Figure 1 (cartoon, rainbow, N blue to C red):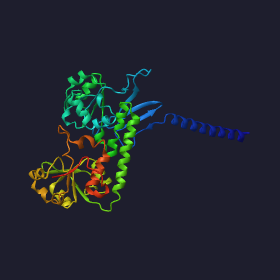
Figure 2: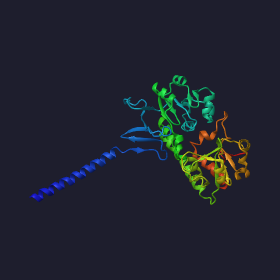
Figure 3: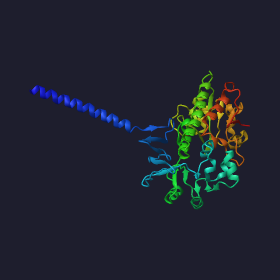
Figure 4: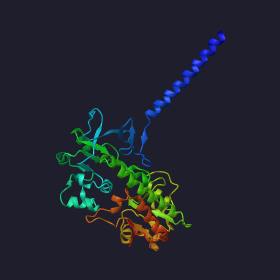
Length: 379
């Protein structure tokens, strides 16, 4: 009888264990979080229990703050919880603060929602340029100095800002005045496709997620196809990049940077590919010359636009093989009508075209019918 009671106890415990386990599994499935982001590390779009959230993980460099925003459609018969950060979509009046935001908005056909932009002379995108010239977009300051009075008078529904190393004081003032502010950290992404995927960020804001997903899928497909094409070449030309920017220090992409990723995906031998770091390296002229004097190509030599400018800055540039063989390529010569460099504006959104440019430069026969989008041979 004692043994029977003991066995019954074990059976009860066994059943209880598995019923609990089943209940836990069910709970996890119910609360399953579905992410829609594939490459980007700085933001996420999730749906949990029928609620959509936009999450900003990297607002600026070395930021440990995570910002969550509940996304709710306008005119829904639900009560907004004002104790949480809530954004009602679709946004119809927006202020953006970086030229990299504009091509993404244009691809979504929402450029007419932009009502303010700082230092608009840098804008090259044609559709937005027309709106600026016609007075539809108000100047709200210069570069990192926003005119908060003008911005507040515009009464945007949302301001999309960016900051280098800390919360921007102007944006903090605007937020305190009751206007929603979101930081966009596309420039902090470590891969070309990670940067381009921020179009999904704008897709949420304009309630055009499906369209944003479709556009990104096209860019991703084109990029990966170009990467495959590059692998068809058996030759891997050596690459030098950057130039002396200040105080005799040569700045060039570090081995883990998104620029180095472009060169890797183009099947090239970037001479600093094994260096550590995700930003720029700061090296002496001597160390760069020792390693890069005989590089086959020199791609993106800083802000220089001509060989004459290079020589006026430093005569020693003439000693590099790429200078002698006329194989220096720059993105700084292709500009909009008011002087903005196209590469700095559009390259984030269209990494597929950047990759094709680099392949065209170094292995012309692989893309015989392709014309450069960003780069030109330096004259």
